[in-house]
Image (cartoon, rainbow, N blue to C red; front, side, top):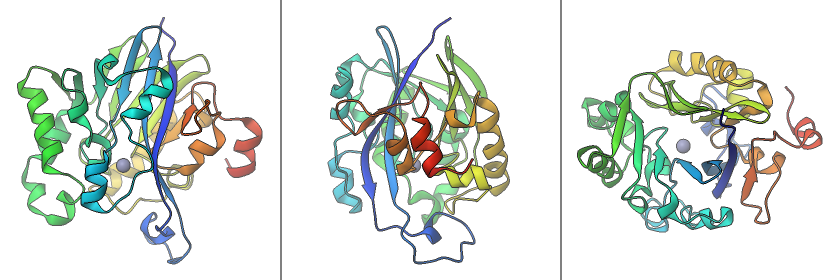
Length: 270
Ligand SMILES: [Zn+2]
């Protein structure tokens, strides 16, 4: 049985967002609620799987959404070059998750069929829905498909010993979460099935949503996929970088041993 190490790499943090932008129906409109941006790496001996790519400086400039680090270069903290990544899991195709796909032109890609259909289908006629996608990123995914480098999944699939993908939907039609066997038990990378701890712990809907019912059901599913609540990792919560132990570079934290108990209990009410 393969037991994996799991790392989160933080490449951006925005401080201009408010609670009203993170919770549907929030009355508190003005309180700041920062958002962090991560990619994730799964490691077992010489195997390294990247979960989402982040987005590079060019996209940051185009959208006026600054990044603090180049997500691809951050791999070097783990001693990895982009060429060492032979597998990329795309949780969905939003620009902040698939924006650096061109840095991995030979990697094999895993995506949900529903996400490809969504990102290339009639929903993209609506500016509100397509705003979160960048056409070049979607084209790069299509290039992977036509290059014979992509598997399109329908629901649940095991892609390696100890790693499975689970379609959740909600935030985007084909959003998938990743379940990983670690020394601490099953860990669930929720990606945007839960942007923040507060989303899934309190059942609070994130306002960028295509299906509220799927999002709410997803809050339960991501918790059921993990052996403990501490092993559910939300996709954009700055707390992740604060409560999990950092490597020599504080932008990279190790997830598979769980959060530092004192830090977790000081910040989260489970
Ligand atoms: Zn996201």
